[in-house]
Length: 98
Image 1 (tube, rainbow, N blue to C red):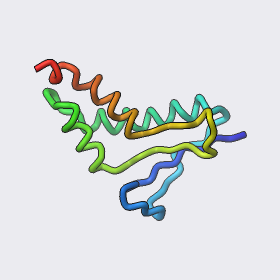
Image 2 (image 1 turned 135 degrees about the vertical axis):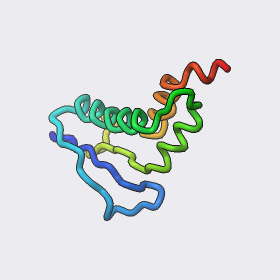
Image 3 (image 1 turned 45 degrees about the horizontal axis):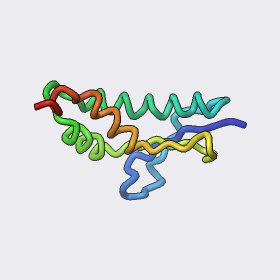
Image 4 (image 1 turned 45 degrees about the vertical axis):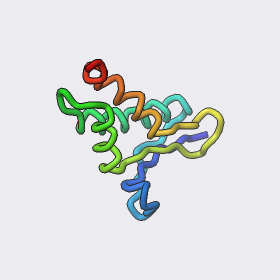
């Protein structure tokens, strides 16, 4: 079975005309890694030194690219927003100490 990672350019508006395929993978693990890669790259692009996690998440959300995996099964469950929250907290951990 092949797993495909898609990105909706603006998932809040549910506009599927802006959907693109990021890649096709032989395993669920590879597809999950690719979806995480998309989120990590977008967070890195939006991150600025001294930024709070909440601000980084806001910038990420405004950009509006959320990857998801098809077919969806118990091995490919991926919540891009939850993953972004976890990663933003790690990127901005110093600011959370203030």
